[in-house]
Length: 154
View 1 (cartoon, rainbow, N blue to C red):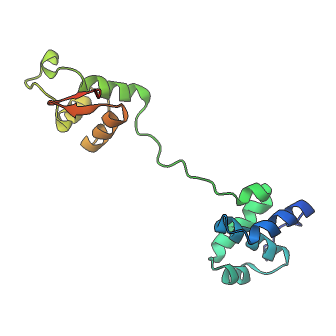
View 2: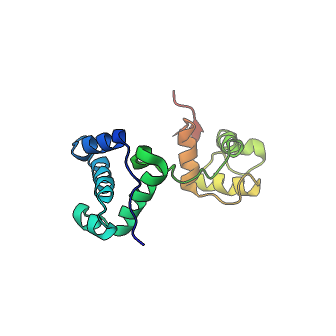
View 3: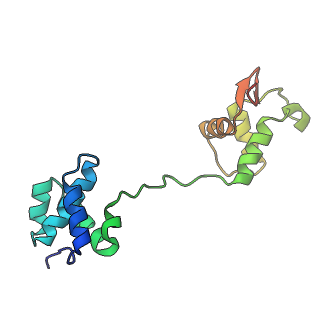
């Protein structure tokens, strides 16, 4: 069964015509062109060949337009990978890194990232964590490694 965009309203037609040739955002222009070609009842494969996209992507933009209108042609930014730790865990990482290991009964006087990693796992703050993730969390908290310990910048 062929897939086409729904009937265009006059305001949508005008916006798509304007956006089709705008150099400001070539991706929006290509999406506008897809919708306009589909409105002329060209088939998905024909449109794909004309705009240089795989038919799967042409179908995606037709479906988004049919469902969300012009807003469906706007890029949706992926939120990225979800955070691995909640605020309580971040606070515990910072608290441990800024503490004195000997005050906790440990046999060393300064933290390394590996020592922090092992202690966080031992204390049950996290199930697993990499040294690099600890480093990033400490930097995110505004700490710098100075004179063999993590401290706020001066």
